[in-house]
Length: 144
Image 1 (cartoon, one colour):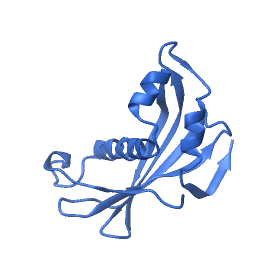
Image 2 (cartoon, rainbow, N blue to C red):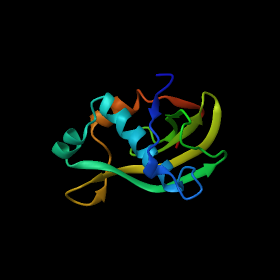
Image 3 (spheres, rainbow, N blue to C red):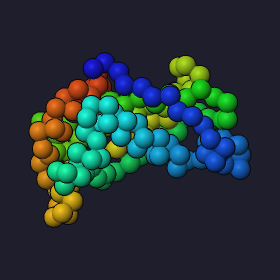
């Protein structure tokens, strides 16, 4: 897959007292975009619950470049930037764009999969490999 983009609706509650986007909203949007991708390819919350596993994050970092204000048209994308071959550990990067091409933020997350009954890290089931192999990859993608 070459791209995965989602348009984001800015809500009044997303704004701070300076009338631009609150910093924590970028992280919420990243989670939304990742879950949208997983759902679109069949790795739903129901599937994860049945197989007793789920994603966890070790690190989440956002670099803010341009402010976003109410009325801006915002899109967010997602790309895999590095991963183990079995997708047990991975890093995903999001770009937040406004009004077409203005890069406003870059959000990067490092994650893994956890067995939710044992509360331990795990190698993911085959469904993860099937879905993650369809994820767009960055030009700088690397196997770890």
